[in-house]
Image 1 (cartoon, rainbow over the protein chains, first blue to last red):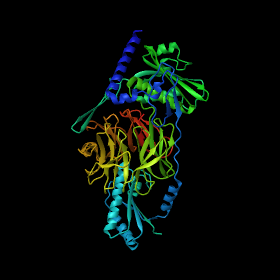
Image 2 (image 1 turned 30 degrees about the vertical axis):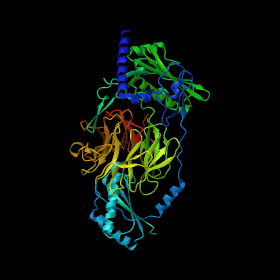
Image 3 (image 1 turned 90 degrees about the horizontal axis):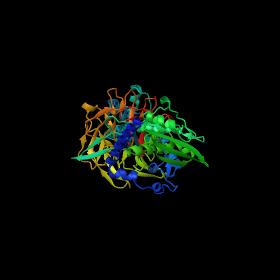
Image 4 (image 1 turned 135 degrees about the horizontal axis):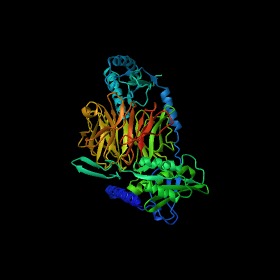
Length: 209
Length: 425
């Protein structure tokens, strides 16, 4: 029995510290969690809150009750996302109409062009100057060793550097630039044999067929 | 002994926010007995008591007792035998919980009882619903127990949105915080990235490439399924994060030629530019008060974490190459304010998750090993981080306690699961 008393005191201390936590949260949080809700208002009347199971904005907690209150837990209506088939078809058609050029490769963490990259771009520049209405898309890509977020920006830097160099060679074609960071790798091995292939500017011609 | 771990004291000194952390120090967990729920009806899936025990363990507030080892019968009928309750009390278990599952028509009624060894029954909960929602009834009961003893909302009702690769496309998915109840949200056959929850967890904002070459920021309403473009500026529109009030969205855009941080109001109409620098600024994250933002910038040569006021003034470095390594990116601010989790790169060029306090005084590496770990996101109670990792050989979503213990794998399907975002409760 003595032991039980000690436990009881221990628990009270624990609970009191818990309460300090509640008070320290301040009025704002306390209002949110203690505020009257639909369910609370009906406690004891046999009715209760309804909450969508695991769904959006789960209903506020009601607290433990003494009376016969009830909470209905509803299965969330399954949110069935629909495929926009027209949009997907248009994207696939555009993809199929692209003419891919050779990739330009970059050093780790860098966006400056290598001499080999410049040489390859010079060849593309000849074609573009001769076909000035052809549209060029430049996508920047990265290897997996940078963060997902920073690689989006690094990929764009590579694509922008590529466009800048082409323009310096007198290319006046419309050039669109984007970046896929490390989201669309050409290989997934975790070593340099794959890394270098992903650090690339991917060039594609549109309207060149 | 700090049990609550919920106190935030935000003191503004100049523009630096100081958060005093009540979770530090040894947390004295409450020993608790959980009896096997009496089930008078077959319920598919994991036994309710096991779900409850896992929830209570993950709260990090309770020490779930092994009743069999204490010689206490965990099985019961309508309630545990008086001798069992007595014995558990004597074994040092001040709190005891049990439940029953009974059929009522086509529905199931779940009763949960909270009992204290020193004073008897404290209260009970009754939930009614289909057999498919029994897990959610148990999650609610777990959060009620957490709330009863701490005043905190608990995390058992929370959800995790993430990106999963299906058929070469990256689609948005959502699951319960314990990895169950997986649902696919988009079917775009495109690239969707970086989901961020609105604080009321009704909407997800995310990056999509479905409209063309430039990634845009779109919003999905999880009640109606409606989708709406929020940011479609020319260039990349990336790394969105809702403000704690849900009134604004911070993001990065390259409309100005290089990546800068902006915010936009929830109507998607009023933009405000926050950074102005020739280097790349991206991946903004809000302090819980909404007064500060942390972000990633390569203005010093390599990516590092910086802080600024929410109006873009008072920019200063938080991580430094000589102290924290040459590559630090993509911070997320804990809802409790006391830590930022971010992606750090070690000397092996491997990405890990690191933690730093907003005053820079405390730092630690959270994840270890030779896997690439990325995309951290905090639980609302600030005691857990969810992230993606290659430690299983493929990329999956994992949960870890903020002290580095309790690693748990959450995804087991699909070969690439990434970019987790943890909702409020």
